[in-house]
Length: 242
Image 1 (cartoon, rainbow, N blue to C red):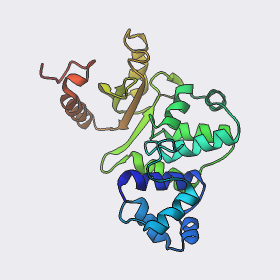
Image 2: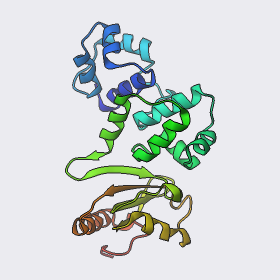
Image 3: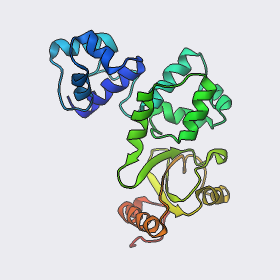
Image 4: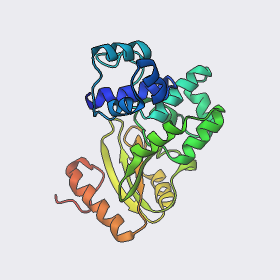
């Protein structure tokens, strides 16, 4: 099973609030088999694929599917619960104390690694908690082994800026990385951008950060990222050979 279909299987199962054991029982296979399919290490036969399509909806060749392989498990859960409660993204944002783009970005897949504080605020506002598996899958997608978690945030939502030290990246509306920076105080540094003439949507639409406490490592990671981006980091000047 290719990666996109395997990921779609996992997301559609989570959207349906079914565990691997429940899907396995309905198909007459083991939970281990479902796990292998979701990790792209196996492929269901034609009969099993028909059963999965009947149970979860089309997994292949379905452009109009409500589930995108780019959306995180938490984003899928959020969309389903919000719709079930008949709430708009704006209503959820107000209740949770986050920006409206934060909700839209999570549900569209623009943001797939939300901060733990953001998840807590949204679940409290909805009065419903996602499954432990949904949280584990979302956190696993953010983890970079040996370094830390790559987390998304809204660069225009001052109240929910990340704190601590780390490296951050700004993206434009097309999700192109356009600026890389590092700071020992992310919240203070990010607040400094509010007065910049270029710091507004859609030039700066979204952002990500990774916590790095070691100052030398932060500067090295920043330098590497800027050099990799070259002229694509249109707002960066330092560390780039022009």
